[in-house]
Image (tube, rainbow, N blue to C red):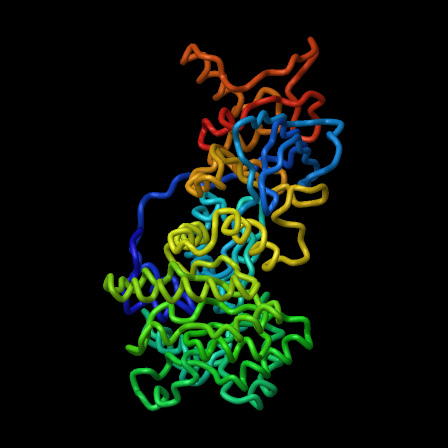
Length: 493
């Protein structure tokens, strides 16, 4: 995976650059495969299914109708899948990134999320002007479901002012302050400017804090535009936001920042402290105190991991080992305290799948715990009013079909056989998407052609059709079509 230059990483943490800056940093990139298309919504019977329930694998037959799991077999089944040997997991969620918060980013990275089975995400500091043109494109069958933090609060010497002023083209302060981001230096200013929040249509309120315990940094000219707000500002933002039923996520850098945000009672902390020692301090100074970890658990604050982002700095091996040792200790302390961990990558060139693999490398959490964080806890934390990450009647029928068992090998997540979003098959083939609910559809034809050409029997078992049986569109088929997930994946579904 290509990484951004080391100097770019601190600027990307709170706010992704504008499209021109990103294009300059990352280049045009490789040619993209066809975009995913969504089939019509289908009634399904998932026979011999095996699925992860958040703790272990369950087995049986599942039914889908109107985009949700249902208790009984639908009267009309459009698709009967034989799933013996495959594993179903709920889609992943990335609680911290910035790569989908512009039309350019959504075009470049949105399909990668679907490919990797990441259906839910939070973009944590976006210019409202960049989000409005793409709001109609997200949370659709053919796109990830995304929360945006367009109310992004910093100080007059805080991130991301320096990045925006040094962009291509550079922005003047009067183009940034209280436009791209909100500047609030005191609790009084929070009160004065709070009416600006309502007009930004922000799903989350984001606050940027950076080494507030190092006041001497505010006297360093090179740090101007790279710092953040005080604990008093954070506390006032949280108080006002919660009074309006708004959720607050806070970017932090130091262990003291982390503790201040926990005391303030924010809803989310955007990363573990010390993803990189920004000012030459020892990595070990970023350890979370056990009592702070316990308080975070008591207040049910969602703590987003974002450990893989350290790799963007390309630290020397010895420094990387020390940083990751601190990450392990922090994860262990939070796990022991019972704090709510959430998966988020803050990796501009990646997503939650990258973070999940890095967390596995750190070795603190076992595979069931990691899978639960990514597919159950994080989706529910981002969208608490939806029934996500479950396979019970009433839950949204969004899931991945895997060829292997991720509880034995998390690499099974890397290449899903099928992606189902609210009862719709996601495929890169137009004819498959258009006819997926029909009995004689392109998806079956491709599987049949493969069987005929190879001279071997396919894993699919066909059902008998009456003499007057005809292909019927989704929602009108009287006989379900039976395929195996492996056959269904043949044409890059």
